[in-house]
Image 1 (cartoon, helix red, strand yellow):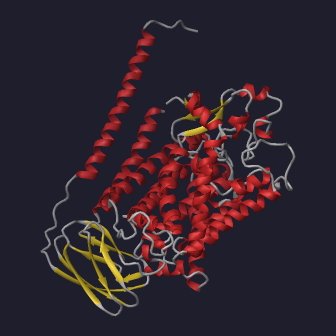
Image 2 (image 1 turned 90 degrees about the horizontal axis):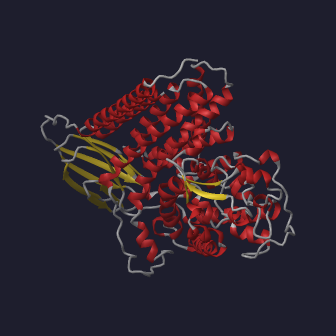
Image 3 (image 1 turned 120 degrees about the vertical axis):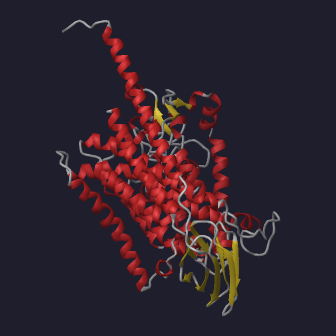
Length: 167
Length: 443
């Protein structure tokens, strides 16, 4: 067996330090890319703002239509028609709501100035499944979903690369 | 990170060894549990104003899945009131120490049931009826009472906590996910246990009862079946049992090879995805189908639910494994690699529960003042209006949970794949697809 030389431990320490630094740098790179994926501003929509009117039929425990798509900046009018008991419609993040009595129509108007996907939900206790009477409003594109999937891709690539480096 | 032994602290150790603080918590929990049963049976049928629905499915659920399981593992089992009446009956005592005379039949659970398949089935049974269970107070009351009676019944026939260990639908998934928790109960020195003849931690002694969970602490390597009841700390004559703080998911480094546990991971993963679609999605037809139990639409829903969990999810998982070559038998690879779904599934449940809990938490205040919906106003909060909380942070928090879960799962996959000597890539792809689907369902 060859005798260990004095330079071997030094070389090994240098190698370990270099390896560690490379690992930290890779982590930092993935982290920075992740921050870009989350925070990079997207080009603003150039579509002209419109007035959009939807009639939504509400019955225990669903809305029809249950998915609305508008452009950012549109003025949205929702005519809520209740077909059985009293129902409401509350839009998450916009914090606006409307209530409709049975057989009546109630109107809610707001400017869709926040982009993304938001749940709207019944805010008047209307029966057993009331907490799950939910619809979805998408303003512009559901950019947070795409950013999240981007993050997921980055995350899995990061784990594979970093663990391979460690090995 | 090295382990930190909590029981080195004499105050913590004395609290854990003393039965009285635990009994005090047990009694509060038992009173709350019985009140939830009563509220469900005699209170208002409006779920969002009934203590049983609001405190069980919103408050308790939030504490369980967002705090207790991720940070304390089976911490809930340590204070769960369900086995208490049966255990007191079985022991013929509440606080008194054992008198060595077996009460009731004291039979051993048959070997064919000594696994978690019954827990898998009991969870699925509740899951198929969950839309009714989560929203109808008297059904919640009946199920809670049923669990209490089942625990009492099994205690009179079988030894130890047979209900908790083999039947409880909640215990099954808490056990699975407790492997990820940064807390554990373990022995300090194997040799001490090897030399200990009487094994009082398992058999009991004048100092306390034998392990109610039918576990020999000397052989503990995973949290799955340790209920953190602390009985072994009281009985060990050698002071050889410790409660430790440890790194997250320490148990997952050695993957399980049991099919019942593997399928538990699929059941939990699939249920979280189905709930996210049915309960939180915008599709009214799905909600109708899930709610109208016994209708043809519900039968189709139940069939799709079971097919998704028992065929589609494990089917694609197996297909991915067939693409890679290995000398390890397929069954072992399947069970070992499914360990990766444990952190993934836990974080799916966290993301799902965040949405459900934050939008409905404001019901807690009203139900606190008027728990039965009888027009009371005990604390002046009965008229508190419904208001979703922190919805602006909901989507980022869900992304954080799901992407964090994917990273956690990917790291677990790498370790499990090394153990069974296969490529981790198919499991990475599988986890990524499942996470993307969950992101689409929730965001």
